[in-house]
Length: 146
Image (cartoon, rainbow, N blue to C red; front, side, top):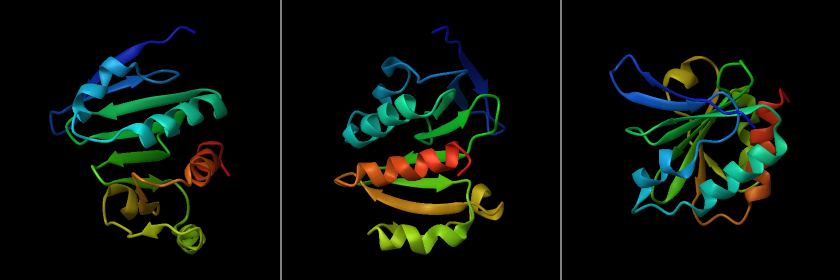
């Protein structure tokens, strides 16, 4: 697969790294997570690239988040990596919050850029979760336009 990696400056002067298709190589992001558990993140990334044709990934090193899109579309998923959990923002109606909560996850909506644009924000996934299939299912729903 031919993959190009682009580095871009954000409005705040920070740098993001992104692919036009596929996942970033480990060297582009792993060093930012030395004290962090990354097994869950790695499992999610691998499942996404195997399930979503045309997947592209973006990484913001300073804020430690990954963005995902399909083809030339805009990002529809953001995964913020913290030591004890992932926080996920999805480009779907927040009315799905209760459905996510019924699967056993916490959702604490945030008033960030995505939340102000009607996204479901603040989905908390503990690093210790064993429910990876549910997480990947929701991410795939969003990336494949429900």
